[in-house]
Structures are given as structure tokens and as C-alpha cells.
View 1 (tube, rainbow, N blue to C red):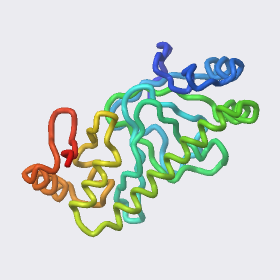
View 2 (cartoon, one colour):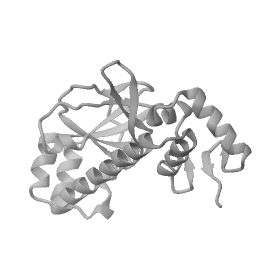
View 3 (cartoon, rainbow, N blue to C red):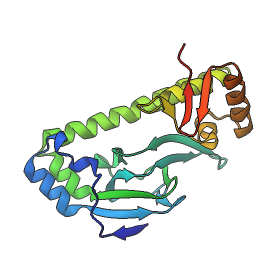
View 4 (cartoon, rainbow, N blue to C red):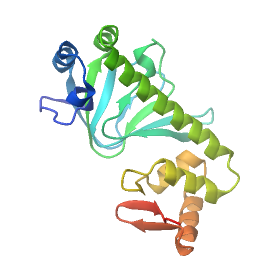
Length: 213
């Protein structure tokens, strides 16, 4: 992970719309570091004790969990305007997940010591972190529901719905859908092909979209 002196224009945490105190924004700006991350680079290793909180400025970061047999499972994906790892802001426990870049990405980082100090004096920052943590909880709940689904079709459709963007497209790769649903890549491909033939999904360069009924 390369440190960059290039000014980051897309740092969500420094967006004025968040209405952070001026002193909070100034302290975050002074403490901020910018990192250029190559594809497949590990940002935070499983079992590591993070010293910083990250904000995705550009690109995508996947969180991967490895089971006792070494198999990978996709837990969530972070794109622009997402913060991680949130649990580290309130605890000093090692992370149980691995954070890996999908494609080249740009991240902003803030020392956890600074973030913790600012949370105690700025309720809007505390609220932002709480809202972000709640969203991660909803991701976990959705994945539990998907894993309990009996059919591959239901698992794939719920995944497409959960990860759709504001334009209605799910931009996960076939491998990422496989990791999220515990289906094989081949099963995901066959399921998507079957759904497309039945006009239940539409595939294009933007991703996969569930066809409106």
C-alpha cells in the first residue's frame, strides 16, 4: 500500500454535509493520510490490530472471512463513502476479517487515537459511525438470510437485490456472488443464465439488474 501526497478530493468523512464541527474537520484533515492500493492488495490482515480507520475514496474493498478449512467467504464490500473497520473505533480487539482491494483503489486513513478523541467531543461524528455500524449489521443479517435460502435462484436474486446501486445494478463479479452465497462460480453462472433466459434479470456492461415485474 503506497502512501500518496496527492490531495484526496473524494473523502466522505470530510464532506461538509455531515455537519461535523469545524474543529473536528480540521483535526481530521491534519491527521489524514492518502494511500494508493493495487488490485488484490491486502489492506488489513485477518488477526491484525488496526491502528487506523479507513475511508474509501475510489475503488472497492472486499472483506473476506476464512473458515477453519481455509475457504474464503465474502462478508461485505466497501465502495466510495464507506468507513472501515468500525469495531476498532470502540475496541482494541484484532479484526476477524481480511480487507482486500478489488482493482486499484484510493483510501484515506485516520489514526484511531484521533478518531476516538473526536468522537467524545462531536456527537455528529459519533452518530455517523453508529449509522455505518448499523449498516454493517444489516449486511450480516442479509447474508444469514441468504445462506438459509434453499434454492440457488433465491440466493442469487436476494444478492442482486441487496447489492444493487442507485441505478438498480449489482456490480459484483461472479466470484464475489459465489463467495457471498456459498455457491460455486459455475452454479452462479448457470443460475444467472437461466434467470436471463426467463427475463428475470438483465445483464449488461453496467452489471446485472433484476427485471422489473
